[in-house]
Image 1 (cartoon, rainbow, N blue to C red):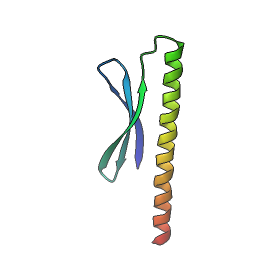
Image 2: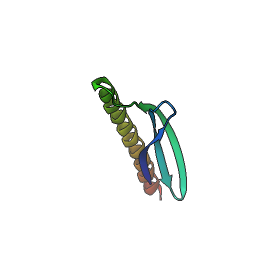
Image 3: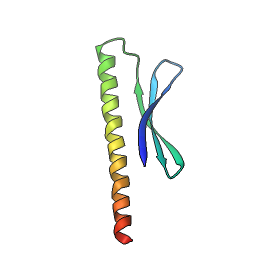
Length: 77
């Protein structure tokens, strides 16, 4: 299982953050509704830093949930 944080460039110049999840030949995307804005000032840089922190936290949460499911499944077997 791998989960990556990726971006899509939007028409207004911002970037949308999403998770790219890949497992057993299957790929799924999860939109995070978090955005990176062009870094024109300190406020924009701060917003981007906070958005990335949230994205990393969500990624970690998903990985922990998957690992927990896998360990439960191994215990059953």
